[in-house]
Image (cartoon, rainbow, N blue to C red; front, side, top):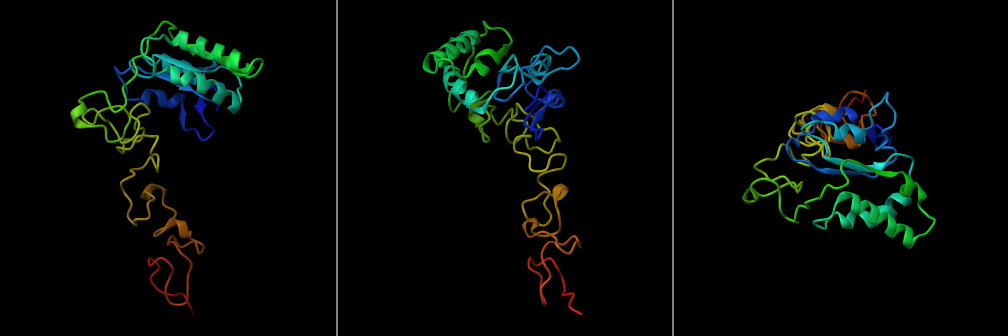
Length: 233
């Protein structure tokens, strides 16, 4: 990742923050990638800073690296920090300090990248209120079909409402198959929405003859049933 995005596949980036739909539902975001909490460049806004300055949406606080960190170090610190997030009554600052001390005690002299570079943007005295397993925000009687912690009566999209539905197709960005186009429109039934279809028919077969119809020509029939006639001379 980088200061402005999660993964180089652009899973989530600064320009997506204003599309989040968690107005009035503050959260704490932990970012397990390099540079996401970088905040000292006055000419550029990093993702961590964008999340905590997004007015009525985004994050109440973000935790993440302000430097380059290794995957091994992220996993080592995560194994110490994440369990603490489920404990009621502890402040975010206390959790961070306790997890770093525990890691330093267990593996002295190692993982200095996260010891020095993993930071908090937000109030260290903030106390988390973990959502109990199986519960959700809203009317619990309506259920939580997508398991994102937002009850069905308040759900904005299928998937994580925190990430939001950037293209407005009813599917949250974390589950979106075809970003920018409606996932529910699949004329040829191959599981690939029309907006991202390679060809008519099963995209897995490809379109080697470039006619817009999936499959390889055979003697009389074509392999997926969408080709109409043989092109045999």
